[in-house]
Image 1 (cartoon, one colour):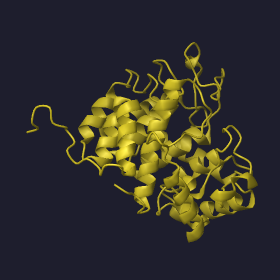
Image 2: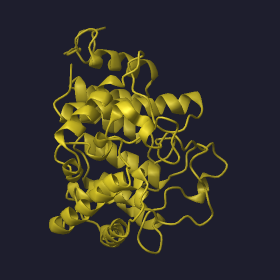
Image 3: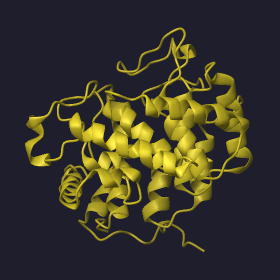
Image 4: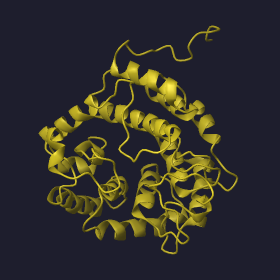
Length: 314
């Protein structure tokens, strides 16, 4: 039993280490959800604590709202919130069961005629929304919203009727990419890394990798970012580096880059930790509170990526 007044997470990182600095940033700025996630990943916290924090964002329709995705404020359920919730459940090994079944029912109801997910439904109107997120009357289905969700559900062995048409949509979208935005490439990789048809996924990833290099979508020399333009929709300096596409060594996107290119990319990621202990977000700046919430999410992702590549320093 924990002694009164003692920390519930006694395995504290070494003082002054990148993890210790990140921990301080999280305790100072993050929501309870990110605090619980940080504790789960780095301080032997529990998945029950993460799930309890996530439940605060769940709505009766099976979706999630309440600014779970920081750029969308307000209570209404949105596909981007549902995707965020599934990422959280996946991160703690709890992406299954009735909880995910309810999410899939919600996704079925909000999908477009071609089985895909729109990023934002028009019910968002009237609530604060980040200026770079459009709200339209009849939003189309998008690979950006659909690909990561479909890939995540396949990775966890989830089978639901919604997945069949959504998977077909993702194949069509990925294989038709010709001049993709880097964020579309990331969504495609999230799908391909777990798509059931592995030969087809490997072929699609190979073609996509050639596009990334030919169209200079990745900054291969982090010391010369001025050599390529930042991706449309991102602030200056918001370039995509190799690790942004290959989040782990097992990703199909890892084959797109040489060992030296990946090493320099990870060096840049490690060096990107700010004085306050957090990592910056490449998104447009918005109001201070959503910006801090986003940075907490990005900080945990950065630490997990570094650990996946053996660069983690506790």
